[in-house]
Length: 117
Image (cartoon, rainbow, N blue to C red; front, side, top):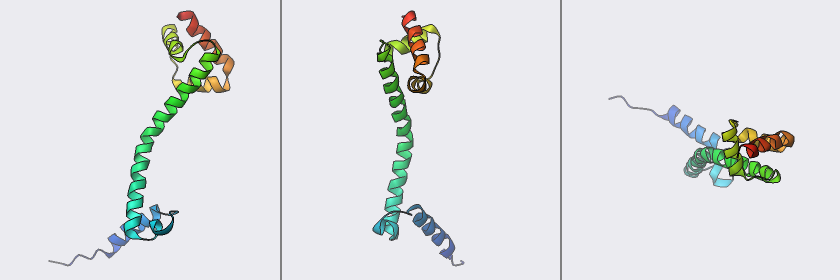
């Protein structure tokens, strides 16, 4: 059986780990075992936090809508319910943008929601 030489493949693999660890401090960017641990851990966090980012943005939008709705004299949950009854289908991201950048438009939406309750 022929001998398998792994130089090219192993160097490529090692090189990709070191490239991923660029900017890490100390042994985390210089020692292969430590680099592997650091990069694998970083990739786990990156995967997890791509999911968490969606959660965090949704909660931020809800906080902004609630704050603006309370200025208009209605709570968040009542406003969402009122908008649903009024047949206004708007996602929370758009509502939060309205609340921040066009408060008059948001106020009119809040009045429409109040009218339907």
